Length: 154
Image (cartoon, rainbow, N blue to C red; front, side, top):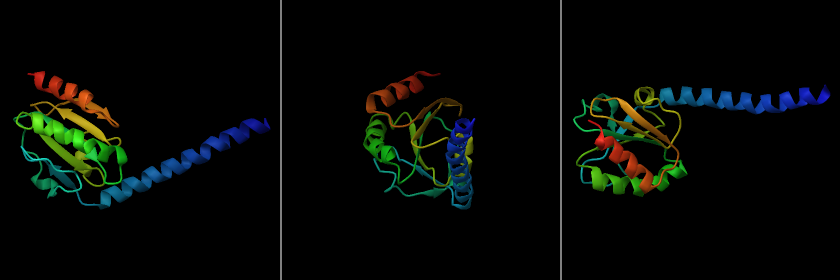
């Protein structure tokens, strides 16, 4: 009996700390400005270098499918994916809208695209429907296949 109580307490404390940190993060995120960083066709820019625009000027209805990445400046996998996404943008930028959204803000976009963690990539078809969500670091080949599947949709 003594050990089972110790084990329960052992797992409860980290869980409580995680929940408290998540709640604090949500409150802090709500207080920040919303920013979205679209990549212009034919350009490559890192998320840290790109300029931001208010969400009110965000996306008009898309004629092209969208590749949306959620990142944060402190996220190592996000930074490792920058050259991969830039390469994809160079190859498919004329057929797919590439958008980088700073997950430190952007509450509306996070709700719209069901944000969970970063890096997170959301693929959106021409009608604005989410067709795939990819979590964590992804290499060039995997993302290229995902973009090709997105382009194959009607």
